[in-house]
Image 1 (cartoon, rainbow, N blue to C red):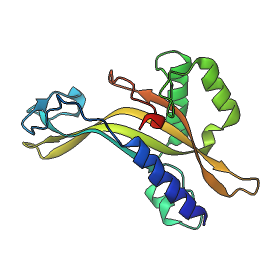
Image 2 (cartoon, helix red, strand yellow):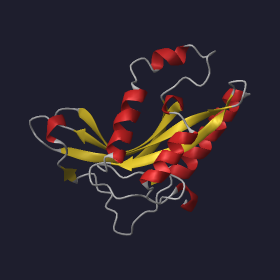
Image 3 (tube, helix red, strand yellow):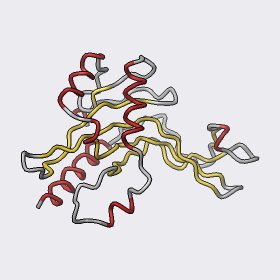
Image 4 (cartoon, rainbow, N blue to C red):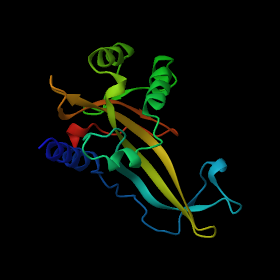
Length: 184
């Protein structure tokens, strides 16, 4: 039953988070090429954008101890390290934190209040917003992460998973903040 609730919540989360209002000026031509992070590129320095603002949730913590195979899938993830670096950057004002639901910028006090209520060790999912690129000459795919939202797993008194709670959302690569999930 716990797993059923988790998948239902993840589905709803994806449904509300993945809607994107299309611009009337949106160019769908696959002949557009872009220049991306030079460290990721090969000799021809170009790639075709194949996904614009794609969003998905990744489990970064096994929500069901009986699903032992998930531990293998999550083998190398360093969620605590990522969370520490993100929160350090927010507190140092190098990154701005946003509320995933409202889309509003959070104050440092808001972030501290969230951290008083939830523990970083309970971060169980990350919502990624990315652009994907395909280098047709080198036959390689590159991803550029434009934002992440850290979501906490919530548990009852007996340690049973109840669902998750959205945490902070941060943006990278000069990406402009998106609307909050409540607006979709």
